[in-house]
Length: 626
Picture (cartoon, rainbow, N blue to C red):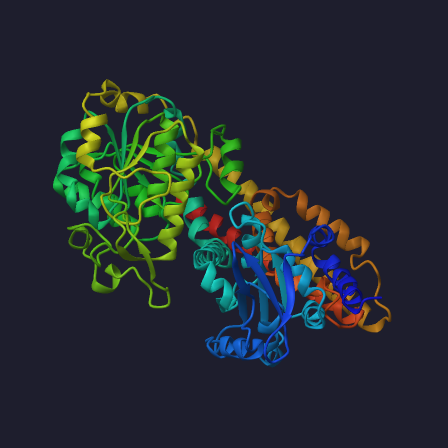
């Protein structure tokens, strides 16, 4: 048998365990346009001719020197995870082998989109060695935009691991834009995970410490969902607080009867002191800073759309009608309470900031067109806020500097093609707006910010031009806002009803905590048995454990509260879970079984702590109401 064919078959056998679909594709690929050749140092290389141009995948003089130069150029003093776009014949892996051996958590993930490269790699000894290595992962990239789940899963797997992103020298030279897109997607996904993980690892405190208190405010609120579709084809302006707002804020004052004006967060402090009173405020943030942002609207009785996440004292500071919107992104708990109180409705995606959420609300009300102003999502002229906001909020220099020292600045181009610094969180918010425009093609969405990042699929126009083309006629529906709101009072909901359902959730949380404690005890018993047995039992669940788990999963507190924490825990420990399943990890079955149980024990302890924490928060809300 041809030695390369023998190696190829061994390689496919290894790949079959990690990516069966890739194996199927490799058996059908024709790699004849990609040839083996030799470098001047007599190392294997690959060469391809495309459009009369010849490309060597590694340096034609010395592949080893190229890979060593690449490796020593990396700043790996803190990194444990290395993403590399392009795999070639594996020489970069060879250069990094000593680094991999220094720590079992050091990992290389190769991202390759050329099946022929994979085919040729699988024919080599170095390729076979690479595929066997438990500290190496190879990913076939079909398309980064049609495969967002690939990057979603990867960033969950390696969340919390310091990482760097690099590229095969050839790919950096011939396709730098592709590398830039891949680099952007990895950074983007990690930043999203950071936000999610921070909240859930802290038991969702940012949400639940306000949620239970805010439930008791429902009898004084109005149902915001009741306004949906009552403003068809009425123009809306969504106002952010970015520095470009300075260019056109004076134009907003003249539009009160021609367009619905939405403002939330710091935008309220830019508009109201200048005599521009929005038709609707939007407030969802759970932090203490929301109080001063909402308080500026007190004298004007501005109606506020809100969710239960809102900082409790800020909700109480709303003097206009509070407009409760059903549900809350990320948690099922509000849905359960909405159902019990008979106020279920369409749940809007909150997005990543108050501008994102305001867009969803405007769409739900029936508004069209929707114009975005003051939403730079970048440091326009090295500023982050419009004039007057810092003074109005009495922000210190430290509070004004919203850029954390550990957070990298990202250099992008603004809507005029000029370089501008931004943050990953802002890029995330901008991407949400781009996606919103794409999935709502029936809406006319216009960016009249006149600066900043801009949004894909959203045209840029000056606010003056928008006024001339879309905002010339008064809209009588605007004068009837208060009349429409009054039709949707939630005064029929009583404190007694809320207390009844809150107590029901508290009892269920307590039951979950007791059951989870029993499960932890059962795991300790099982671990002790395994330590005394050889081999370990095939089933790591005793009958008692199975019954307890079934009881937990039937509790309303698990279904509507703890379940999401369970899912996030599994996401955050995905790497450990995969390692324990991997046949590449050469550990005894006894040790593997014990480690699986210990990870389960950590999960149950975490869920028990979440249950106890929420039980105490509920009691505090009840005590405050008593």
